[in-house]
Image (cartoon, rainbow, N blue to C red):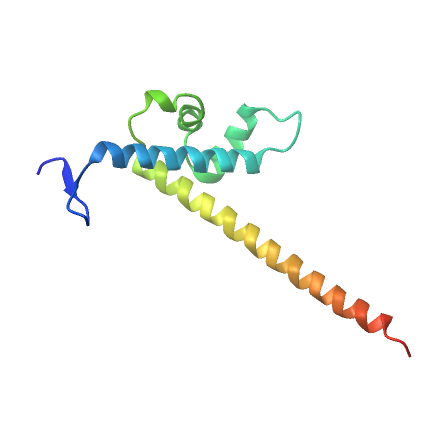
Length: 120
């Protein structure tokens, strides 16, 4: 059973399919983080990759490979996978907290507005 694992259904799963899944996830996370880091029309890939590299600790060259040379890659390093996953989860969490704060602010404004609209 070297190099193989058995799934819950009893089917054999190769490590190759698991590593390509991890590579696909890492690429998706890197793309989403790059898009979130993008500052506008005149911002280029290089500076965006640099800023993302500083935030996540993933080398710029690895981010470049994930962006442009994924077809040549067979797997992704565990430390890169983990760093991208944590950065992506942090970005999602911050986004949801901001959405909750905006929702709360909107409810407060709606209540205040209804109180002012009632006839005296």
